Length: 330
Image (cartoon, rainbow, N blue to C red):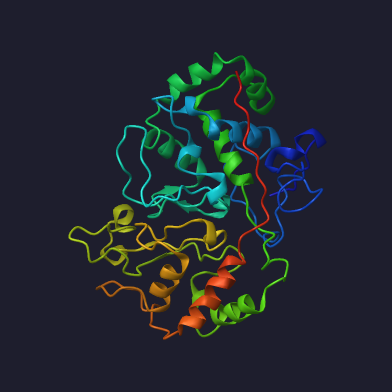
């Protein structure tokens, strides 16, 4: 993707109170943060990433008028202070029903070809409308009509798309915001690890073997693995099998990124691990046995002190990504 440089007045889009853009002081908001510079965002046909689209998408992400009830927004299940998760095992839909899987972080999703825990949507332009309709219960045509009646939105849509709001450009704006929502510039990226975290890094890259599936710089291989979580349930969630219908995919779920992991409890697709150390202990212990468990999962026989060192390293993957929520157009 070609580099995009932004007007100065749009630089605070993903900024904190200081007005500095996330990740790198003085850099444009679409520039990759430290640690992700060598990666390319996955680009959708007909939806080039621009600052105007991303800024509009940011506002839409927080607007409750995007839902059927008018009470929920995307941000209702993806809180900025929790690395765009919600701290719940299962979030609640606009219709009051519970989801069956944990809300993942939205950071760095622009780098993933397949989204949701089971990878059932390909790319953000497919994922966003599925979540918009499924989670928020939205009628996209009705939402577009509502937005077109809001004076504050009219210039934003014109600047971003040269058109009024429509289902297609609302999806494109939200997808653009999520592509621009990136986490890097962590203590790990800055090479400023504590002694405890350095020891954890050595374990991560060596004895514990975490790096095999949690590959830098995203700390995920973007693949699907069966680690046994939830497979002992009476009616287990079959994960990737839901999409592929292949028996080999039963119980496989997408490898979650470990960036921002310290902020995203509870863990696993079923939210069954309450703390980061609980999750590390399960994984370092070889996951949970079942017929399809990935052979990469083995008990590493780590001591409690080593588990603490791994946790310290994982905590170092939280990025310097200040964020300010937008005000809603009226």
